[in-house]
Amino acid sequence: MSDVIYLVQGDTKPQIKVTLTRDDGTAQNLSGATISLHFRPALSTTVNFSLTGSFAGVDATKGEVVFNFSGSQLNISEGDYEGEVEVVYADSTRETVFEIIQFVLREDFA
Image 1 (tube, helix red, strand yellow):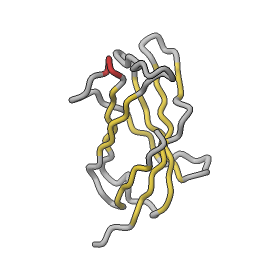
Image 2 (cartoon, one colour):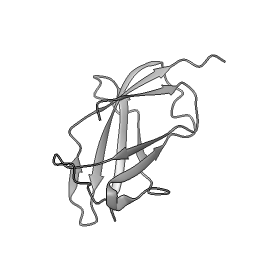
Image 3 (cartoon, helix red, strand yellow):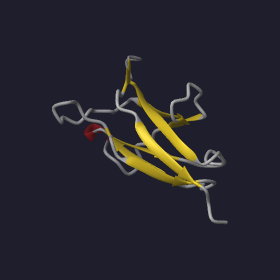
Image 4 (tube, one colour):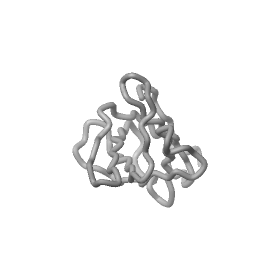
């Protein structure tokens, strides 16, 4: 997850797909889990919002999940942001992905 994801301020439909794997490359089976993406300014301790992952159009058994930005979530200052992915499995156990997703939000032209 070392790539940077680029977003545009004010957009209401960006979507990102994340694939969760173990260190050995094995896909993490996410069936029955609830996955969240917590979004905040880079190096901040305050979360702006959290997105709940969707399995529509992807394969949860292969570790795939989609996060959809919507509404006014990206009506925030341009700059660097980061996201943390958290998985809560069907048995209520919790696992947080160690790697942080980097985002850059730029100002819209209009």
